[in-house]
Length: 85
Image (cartoon, rainbow, N blue to C red; front, side):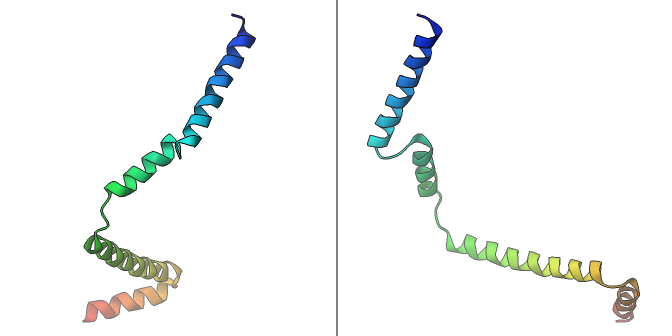
């Protein structure tokens, strides 16, 4: 068998596999994704905990952004006010 015949044979096998996969309603990757999503339960308490964690992280980022953008004199003044408490 020469190399050209081998290439044609491989291409025909791949095309035939694609046709069979399309007739069965999806590919291996899509089937894996479908099964993975079915296995993961939708836990409302976990979703709520993650939402609260994201909110807390957003607040921390906002504080860090304010600290990074404020001038050093304002920051020093606020730190001194916190120490006086």
